[in-house]
Length: 241
Image (tube, rainbow, N blue to C red):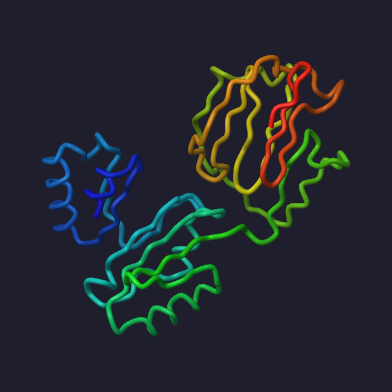
């Protein structure tokens, strides 16, 4: 499965396996195919899906139930590491074990899943209950500087890396603030906007917008606002959407 995903996608893939002999075999075969490391495929030795960072993974795939008839790791662990706003878990379903799978899914306390006819349980995670947003320079049209986020600590670093400083404006020049909506960060750069996944930093898109560079935004007004379907950017005498 890791091989097929590596060949057909650009995903960074982590194989989960607690059988040392299977781990060694997988590493050997993937290395012989030229994709171990080269295609960001790795196979650490893990007893389950206990990965350190919560709500980070785009896709979780398991064929354990399809092959052995046994349930995968606890359903709440799947939800713990699956990112909100579109993270997908695909679980193979052995014929005749649909009731067992339904019971397993119900243990998670979540309802955003469905079982398809192709013998795969498809779990698509929605928004985090109580999560806030930041759609204008000072949070909202009323400039409240409050995200209305009901999520409490403890806090941790979710991801670190791109987009980096190369295309950014020095923060001490007080440019437009980064916006957050539906799991995405809209980052104002140097005459451009960069959009990344707010939960794992995956670059989604980037657009060059002439004359959109603004310094000292706090002395004037915000130049970006995001709604459900559009991002609005004031640039010079133009409004981009």
